[in-house]
Image (cartoon, rainbow, N blue to C red; front, side, top):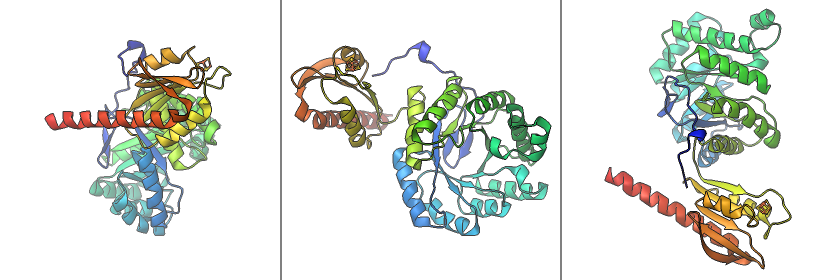
Length: 374
Ligand code: SF4
């Protein structure tokens, strides 16, 4: 179910669009979701397997670390196997950037001010242009340049923005404009203030992140608060949730943040009860099982799973498929917001999975027919 409501609208900052491989970033392009592999890049098979899992979870862009020549040597095979554009993460060594650009990187994550002089920047820019690579400048509060730390005394929004502008200038001086920028910090206030100031100062796409945010729960909350604030203000063209968790989890959390703000739609959006004694069935276990069994669905569908009729019918009215717990093990199923039929506790799980899968297939067929007619 969808509806147009002005109080839900987010006016996105109009950034300049760049291409990361075949994927547009910025402008009116959908906000892309990124993650980063944690396998040894030199182990091409393990890295490709992980990339596949991230792609299945919906990653639009995946970053792969290139700390050594063994990694950039494996990068070619990895880039050939990947279905989404890859970003080569370069630490300081500009030669790794040249190798990664030649090996099929769609983007280089490198800070031009940190690679040892204008000649090297020129070489990296030449390789990026020759191979159609974008560049991502990644300023991080934890690794700010010494002169900026001395000038400002500590990492602060002004220092992060000044660092970003310095790196940007180096690319612009070499007539390179296919870049996006991040000013990350693990402190939510610092990151949000820096991004807000940067959004006013530049027109390029911004890559959002609350860096080293923490574990799955703590990091999700921090990321949702920090990135959520920025996205709500219209800032951000691509995001990475940084979690001490598997990269697929970062992708899932990234989508949940975007879905909660109506900025992306993907898969099943579940509305469900918190723990509550009024539930007519075990909502927690049911939702957990449904999330697992429906994780393969990519078509946007909303599903409400409510334990009783206090809020059940109201939520069901707003979702594609609804379930409301009743007495005696009998529960009401709603289709397109309207009461439709009753289901028993024993059959409930398989039944709802079947309904969601059928709805997804119906929507996909309608979409395919529409595309064929155009
Ligand atoms: S809908 Fe019912 S079961 Fe669910 S939280 Fe509200 S009162 Fe509790």
